[in-house]
Image 1 (cartoon, rainbow, N blue to C red):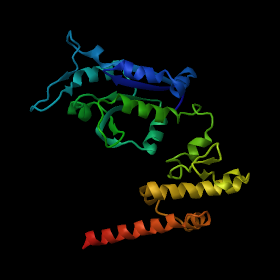
Image 2 (cartoon, rainbow, N blue to C red):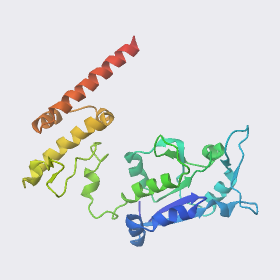
Image 3 (cartoon, one colour):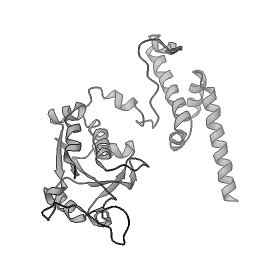
Image 4 (cartoon, helix red, strand yellow):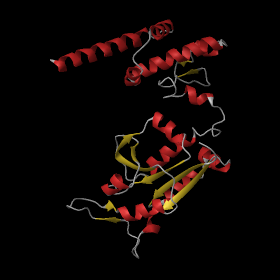
Amino acid sequence: MSGTVRIALVTIFPSLVEGVLRHSLLARAERDGLVRYEVVDVRQFADDPRRSVDDAPYGGGAGMVLQPEPIARALRSGPLPHPWIGLSPAGRPLTQAAVRRLASLDGLTLVCGRYEGFDARLEDAVFDDLISVGDVVVQGGELAALLVVEAVVRLVPGVLGNATSLAEESFGEEGLLEYPQYTRPRRFEGIEVPEVLVSGDHAEVARWRRAAALARTIARRPDLIRVRGGLTDEEVSLLRRYGYAEQVTRWFEVQRDEDEADGSRGC
């Protein structure tokens, strides 16, 4: 990647995304010349006086479908930067690894779906990829596209002031959830900030944070531990050292149950 990252959004509601792009980190990244946004109104590429961009589905059924021609014309108008990515519940799940790949590119274009979705021929012959931001259905792809934009922009070099935070946050290099964070007051709802965090021992704080990240991931996203290949002996020792023996037991119970389930399926 070199120079300014070019990010285009193709939508039938340009004002819905333009307002968000003018605020906070996203606006600052453009002001600093690190990214450049282009918002393209699909209706400008319709070929009838009413600027229609949708029509009834072949075969009948509820709702309307986005026509392929206005979207294809909008994409080819610049042309807009590849990859051309449609936002759709039928797409590949968005992950932090996928975001890192997108952030390494010189540009990308996000196409926002609406109504019953895209004409399938866009997916087959025009788009480079389809992405889903989760197993949910919303009214349109604009909010999903903005989620992708923020996830990508914050990884563009120079956008965040403290690059260390990227390595330590959830889904970082170690594939774990981030450790719990605390601030003032020291006591809230009867719960004290862990003593180690006010000890001044930075090495001990780092070890505790790693143990806490492992424990939180086991409790909330054991699938991430599984993807990493389980727990190492060193990680088991670290968890036990900082009072997370219960999470170690839970992890091995989860593994045992899965092994038994796999054995049952193989019979």
